[in-house]
Length: 257
Image 1: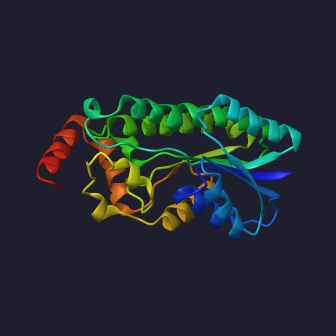
Image 2: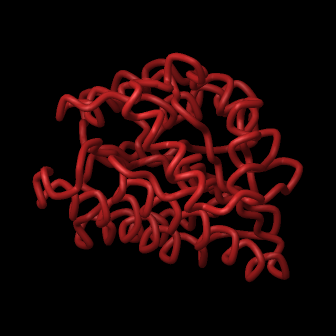
């Protein structure tokens, strides 16, 4: 049985992946949708033409991941695409934040993504794809967004190395690194009262990010960056000393830019 596994599928970019893939592929038997909220997953499933299997779970709970892997074994699943979208961010000065939320961010954004990827690779075949949601925050340390940026830097580094390891098996990994995306992400990220002012200049739609990510995955590209501002940011991060860029960011922050 050919399946797509999508985490964070109940909203935002994860839901958009499910919607677009539902339109593109007719040879997939089931979409396996993973998120915390069963009710939201049911709503997404109703909108899809494909048969779905719902996995309401906390991905940081290893025992819950056992259920997902058991399902792959039980149904002789061939995972044709794994899309890791589950994650969250918290903005604000590190020392002022709830430590539980900061550590939870590391567990979900890094540990759970790594564990699920490790568990699903044995069920993949040549031609399978892995799409990992990183962020343009991975390109440069982000004062005021320090832990989130560090987690996404991990995702980017891990995914690019993994992609090289899996090439010989015919499995291709794409890291998706958008800037601000118009999703519920900022409902959580800005809950502390800190806002990302630059988002009003660089915000893109989830539809645009996902469409490019799927094209880049099809073309076997290791990196997908949506929009000229984020591509320029990547170029700057590669060529300009990070210390200089951090000084500029701090000045922009003081000026409210």
